[in-house]
Image 1 (spheres, rainbow, N blue to C red):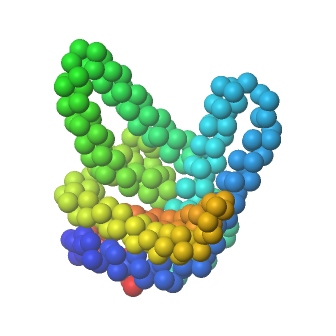
Image 2 (cartoon, rainbow, N blue to C red):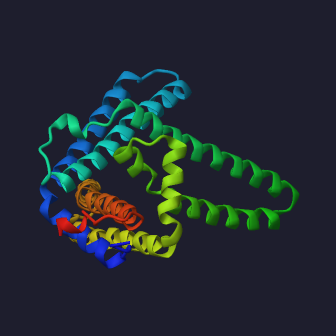
Amino acid sequence: MYHPFSIIETLKSSWAILRKNFIPLVIYSVLSLIIYKIVDVIMFVFFAGAEEIVSGLIQFFLQGIIQTYLTLSFYKLILTLMDREYYEFEFKDIVPSLRMAVNFIAICILFGILVCILVFINLVLERQDKLYSEIFTVIAVLGLLYLLLRSVLCVCFIVDDDSKPIESLKQSFEITKDNFLKTLGIVFSIFAIMILTLIPINAIITFLQPENEDDYLFLIGYYAWFAIAFPAVQVIIMVTYRKLVYSHMDVDDSVAETD
């Protein structure tokens, strides 16, 4: 391996990419929020007066599809910006295919089914013995967190390699197999970044917020935090993916060249 995976090097590369492409990433984050809110308002108006359960399911389904496309397109944008020094790109290059969206939704459904099964088992155990239920809950939560950590990069494979659901999960498990603790370190770094970006924004909004007023400033603060933190997090995930892939290949680490 020419470039063994390193947390420090991953964060340095992520910062270099984020610094070079901060404006387009923030603009895309803001546009994503605007698009999501516009669609949310349209669906609210369109389904006003409809049966609550049916309209709720339809809105949940449509919002899921929109969120899927926005998420996948953001990953494609990051990959394109990382590699843009090697080729030119157009808007169509960051639009995910229908197959990518279906593969991503399929993985979400698989995890949803798993969660439902675990909840059902927990309810059965709770009726028999509350202690068993509590033990099972701890084990189930830890197991889910472990699975999420090992499979977190499956989306990257879907976007970058156009992998199928099970294939992408296997690929994510493979590249994190020998780097579990380092991957966990990346996750802790991401949480730290999210908190560090939230603290100053929250402090400013709290200071400016008048008494007995609406919480509109907190909503603005949330959007500002999302526009800053979301690109940073996604860039770190994508760079982590690239670093881990190259660490398992006998090739030069092209991510390092972007530093």
